Length: 101
Image 1 (cartoon, rainbow, N blue to C red):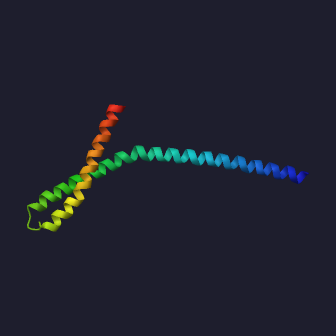
Image 2: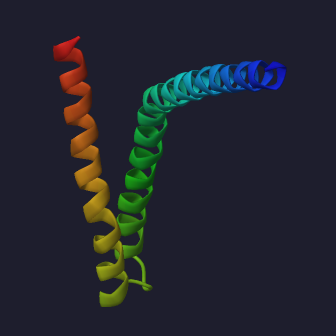
Image 3: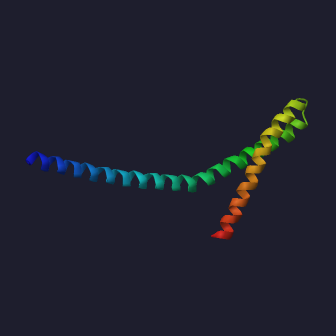
């Protein structure tokens, strides 16, 4: 009988510890995701706008030099197109952020 009571107590303690660990893990994950989402958008937007500026500057500078050729033009255009789309998405996000809140 004593062994039954001790095994029941240890099973209850293990279940309690598991639920506490699960709640703590869930809360940590939620706060980490929300923190990343808040900080991540600002960091990504700055980096992507700087990359767009660098690519556009390189395109303009190289177009006036003797190193400009069709392959380089295609390579830069392939790189610039997604950055322009990202820029417009960032602008739209910032506008919605100002309008919505």
